[in-house]
Image (cartoon, rainbow, N blue to C red; front, side, top):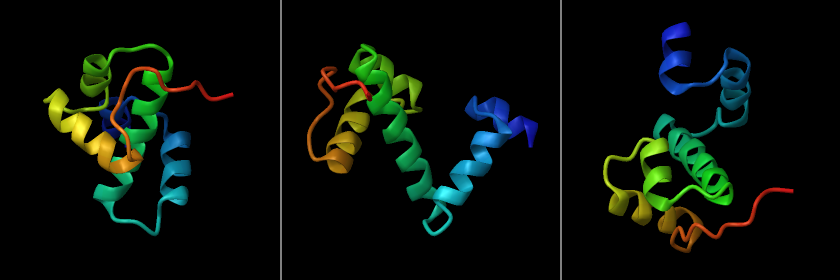
Length: 84
């Protein structure tokens, strides 16, 4: 619904695409994938690790850094390559 879209800052079309893409995973894993994908994008755009942590919904930069490292195998550096 619209409330969910506003809360997550995504469109209904994008939300439907995500549901299709991640339909065979748990809700928490789906949310983690979305957060990490956005985090990598923000880092590649030059945002600081602290800003990214906040932007993707983590209250604690250290918790975000641990989650990022576990997901990608390396800590967030702020030097991630932009997508081409």
